Length: 152
Image (tube, rainbow, N blue to C red):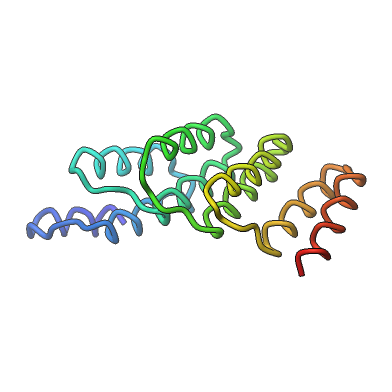
């Protein structure tokens, strides 16, 4: 990825939101959070507005790295933006909090979704059921399964 970045800079190719999203996601998946965050700051300094894909890549990487404060920081950043968020983004946040066993934060995502007029889907609930099951929280699993059957 670094050689692609150098090539683009050498030949004066302009970076777009797509370029940044690909690079941020690639470094995040590789676990190179330092480079991922650097690219995110660079993107912002160049006045390229992050979108839902950008934020999802950041949240996914921080979730895999077990960095709950970083995920919360992304959510605070989003509160002050006009980025249109979708169910897929919120499912990513649910998954990140579930991986880190931040169950109250995970449940709070449902509230955020309702505030943003974004409906949870079957994936939202199944991701939560998986996290609660892994954490041994059977009563929460049963509650969500009931809600899931009502939704379907």
